[in-house]
Length: 252
Image 1 (spheres, one colour):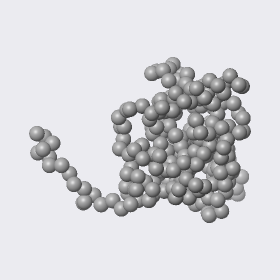
Image 2 (cartoon, rainbow, N blue to C red):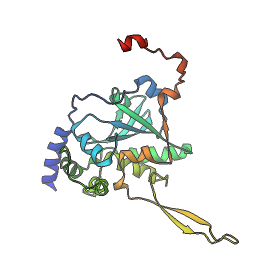
Image 3 (cartoon, one colour):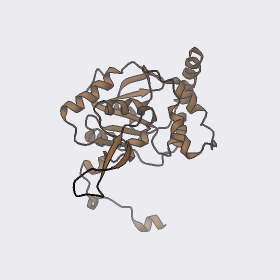
Image 4 (spheres, helix red, strand yellow):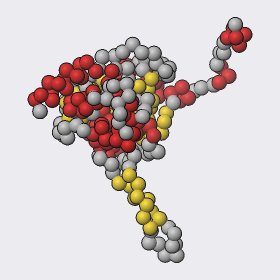
């Protein structure tokens, strides 16, 4: 255990260093992003750190990090997220730290004020927990350009951590918070025959909770239970105001 902690911390320091890479997708202007966020939104981030490459490879996804937006919280300002950081553990952080990053807002639907309070309280109770450094060791093995890992096994590569309840990784922390009020993310679905009078072909959909350790940032993006919020549209987009470059200049 002690050796894993030492190796994990050293790797975390190395892997969280940002790389100077060109972003394939433009970032949302910070003021537009802040105006669109609501408490309990999940903010997905396309990271620039070395470890982001491993996470994106294993999850077949653009997204390498997830954070829970909570609004004003503690002393971090008016726009805060709770996240599990490799070095800092579970902490509050200002949304502004992701200025310049490609992000996506995933919004749960139908939450009451009490539901939001419960989700945020669950996450706040985890503040100070450590990041699962064994998970970092596991991820570091997949930083090779094309590691020979079959697609069907890649998701489980993210679930090889210690299992210690006082440790977390970014997406599992958020998954646990939503599961605490039984809000679905990507449950396993079972179809069973329904016993109803006069309906021989009726079936019922039964949802089974997936273990929180198997969730990744991508799951909030593809979940049918989270709305994708596009800040540019939320803030009022009018295509007639777009200023296009002169086509002749483009051709020249």
